[in-house]
Amino acid sequence: MGHTKPLILVTNDDGITAPGIRMLISIMNEIGDVCVVAPDAPQSGMGHAITVNDTLYCDKVVVDKDAPQVEYSCSGTPVDCVKLAVNEILGRKPDLCVSGINHGSNSSINVIYSGTMSAAVEAGTMGIPSIGFSLLDYSLDADFNPIRSFVKTIALESLRNGMPSGVVLNVNFPKLPKNDIKGMKVCRQAKAHWIENFDQRVNPLGRKYYWLTGEFINEDKGEDTDEWALKNGYISVVPVQFDLTAHHAIHDINSWNL
Amino acid sequence: MGHTKPLILVTNDDGITAPGIRMLISIMNEIGDVCVVAPDAPQSGMGHAITVNDTLYCDKVVVDKDAPQVEYSCSGTPVDCVKLAVNEILGRKPDLCVSGINHGSNSSINVIYSGTMSAAVEAGTMGIPSIGFSLLDYSLDADFNPIRSFVKTIALESLRNGMPSGVVLNVNFPKLPKNDIKGMKVCRQAKAHWIENFDQRVNPLGRKYYWLTGEFINEDKGEDTDEWALKNGYISVVPVQFDLTAHHAIHDINSWNL
Image (cartoon, rainbow over all chains, first blue to last red; front, side, top):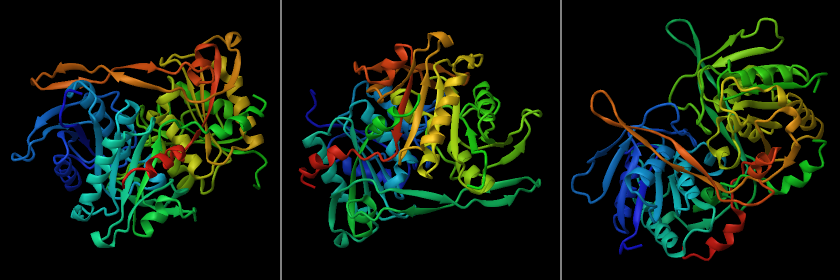
């Protein structure tokens, strides 16, 4: 690599000034040379969105003048940030990409809606070892201190072992004091879904509109799932793949009259 | 079900007036009772985005006054459309959800960036048999006539057989005259990725900005992939899952010092 220290790309979907990414940057500065490329505003729920019909701004900024990292604030989505970082800013693949720490859960089916995880997946498609971190606390005042050492351990272990091919990690932390966290569990994604309850309102001009609200339904009773781990005081570590092929279903569908 | 004809939800990501969805509606009218809930403007590249911090409008519209379907135009993303359709408009699960026909490919890794496929996946998470259709022609003047009968066959076979649990279909059509299409192939997603080449420009105020452009790299030589099928004159049918767990990697990661 020609580097003594690993090059680490940090991004998120809550925006470059969110407390979660500031904590993640601080942890990564203990491990390697850090470059931050993150959205200039919150991008929650953006999934794997990319900016195809609009311009992208990406400007060098100083958020914390006493810290060593280089930072760029980007007008696009988390996936745009990763694409710009690797292809325009770094000019090479970083040794690790970390995304988050998200304010709120990305466990179970939430992985598919998550901008945090999409950034990690995007880096994964480029062959970069990559991890998304999320804390089960939506508050902007969330306390990330209890999980600091765990984040560092996972990042170091990813660098030491390398990531299995075609895989990125989805790591979720329970909202617990440090001493109550029982450890980490490698899990599968629980089978769950959302039932939406739209809040219907009328705007000042008399036009009907909706707010999306919803209820998370976990129909999965397995004790090897991320939901089980989080409910029972563990940190969930789910290996996530971006080959979405349902290989087991190919045989079934071959029996159709197509 | 209490219905003699199946209830079919139609959506897309190119917007409610795009030729691709108009063709899909016309085909579905031959099969069942059609309800359209689609974005009021193009949403390409939106991936699995949802609208969490903004209002949603969803208004009944008449796009084609001589056609039997009911239609709603929505200010949100394709995933928002599906959530609104099932929970607010239909008040029950449709018997089938079809998305598209997309103007452009959603084969291989493009599945993760695709609003068309995200709508299908969203319906899939609710247990609705669901299919995304895409034609390998980005033009607004694309000719959908050659694929008309194939779309109908796949929809009918999905209704007849039911969809394997946890699976939706990603169907891509080559841009070919009907007689040159060799048939359908059930495939796996090819291993591929994008290398981005950002087009860097300067705005009238002197600020640097970027346009995203990219090159699709298919590193997969397999003859059981969607890319192979499409290059060789076949329609690709990939069963797609939304359990993203890389089950094979759980053992590997359990050997780390976590």
